[in-house]
Image 1 (tube, rainbow, N blue to C red):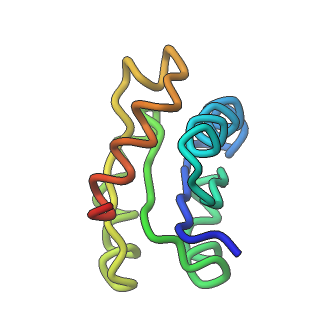
Image 2: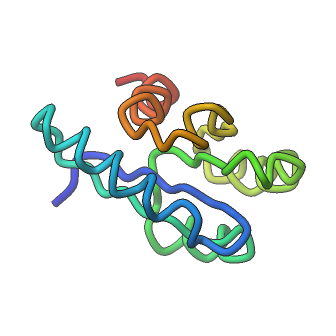
Image 3: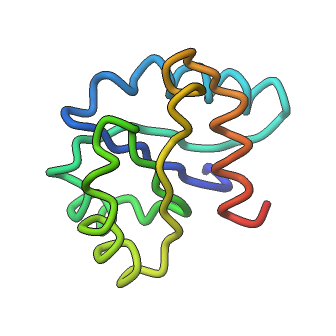
Length: 106
């Protein structure tokens, strides 16, 4: 079982799939057993209840939804932030993984 669960949310949950793969590679290369997955912003509430992630990261294209999603994550006691636009655009999984770990206090 994964030690930490990281949820990425974007408009449809598809544009983050490559970033998820890059983050997973970075985690595995560091010997970390994390579950990392992407979902659409419409499914955030359901996934919070189903997967109980340790952190939620929003794609920069949905940064305008931060306050709305923050209401959901705050209720669940889960940290939330927006992925750095440069790291997202360049699919830098290692940098995004580091940001997620910082939010989780790892």
